[in-house]
Image (cartoon, rainbow, N blue to C red; front, side, top):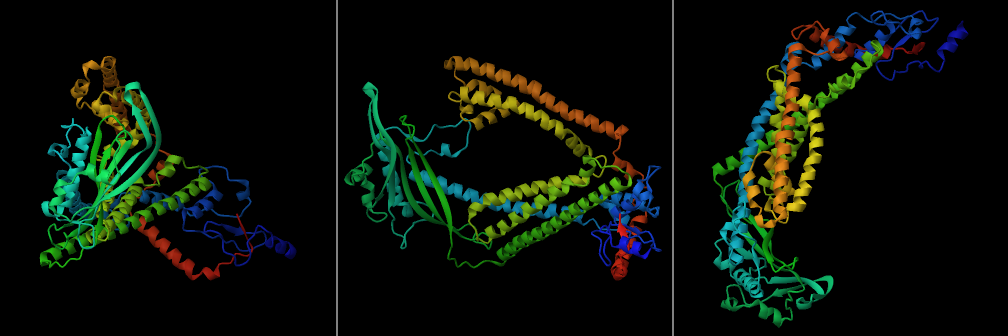
Length: 627
């Protein structure tokens, strides 16, 4: 016998003396010949499931390997404790507070975050609009000063456009336009109302650069339809030097004579484009308070003359790229401005802290949900010999928490950019990125509050309907999108050259989407000229067919999909549906939120953790076999 015991204890399947199990769910029973029966119970549900699998459930046959083991059934409250854990996980914040007295910190944070983020966004929106409007006004001012014959009608976004393209159509018109640009640029520091300066160390006039891009060789004889071209593009630039800024000699400056003098003649048959480049500096004084500090910018201005199409129309446009410079200021701020600046920075810091804490709590809840999911899967697999379905396992993933973590990240990054913008650390061009982050984050913050309204049965119908209808909507849209893309490509190719609303694929898609919603129908029909012949007839058939299909069929079917989901949800609320294994298991819990059993479970867990830490050195693993 001693030899047998010795051999049994040294078998490879048994742990060595003093060894620690790989996890708390390992179960050890007495080996033959050992007078003492010991078993290690874990406070987790996996250990309970392991114990329960040895005893069997509801008359099921116990596996033969467990029948040979001298083991006992788990305590009678094992299932109840597991039910309470699952039920507590799916409780709303108020029920959790009643069950264990835990303050709903995430709910409090979301409510305060709505107020803080909205206040922050309103303040930022005002600043962002002021910045964009400021640079837009500067662009308009330079257009009016530099571009000859510029009309204020072009500054208004009207549809259809009130004026045609801004272009030159004769050689003399082109040279007059360039002459006007050179003359206005040489006197802009004295004639313009805005504060402009030249990009030079002492503020003197810096030369304007005339650049042309043309084909290396090109000859055209239109009378006999003959041309000879070498399509290799060549780019050359010539600085235009002259007297100091404001000198009267600039009034008689002629571009064609200056280019001819420097052997830089423009041959329009080979010309691709002309660019006039120069740099200006400006200072924006704004409100001169602690927040609206003066800004210094350098503008790289380029006036384009585009002859790429060679269709007799030389398109003219002005583009600017700004770069922020460091201002050397000496401004005495009032006490009110300092308080306003401190308030803005305080709001930014509080928002960052609020979002960081919300992010931490939501990530912790997601991790705890995955931990409980693994325990539940192990419990059902080992105790009930069942496998949780995919839908039951996905119930442990709270998509609302995922959305809240995303908006927390967006708002934290956007707030950091906002602080740097308000302190003039980064360039104002980052306003677009910052506004995108803060705006999207604010949208998700307001949408995240729907989670807490969803705990109330009367307010939950919208969320449940959207969740139920989403798969069917995606399948329906995937089919409708194929038909929609076909109409878009057809309309763009056929009607694009003849209709202003179909000039590009994106404009075609926008036009059809507007028509589908009943917008601007008559204008779309009326713009097409009757003289287009077959295109006019095609446009009528095309538009009527699209409107009939999408307004009377596609949209009606789309609404019916949503209404069908709504009727299904309402029927479920009235009659109910067959619950899943997880829901059946949780529904058998007889402890409501006011029961003291939840707090007792927490107290038992704390006592067990304390005892296991104190007497860990007394655990002996020799002579036991893991099952």
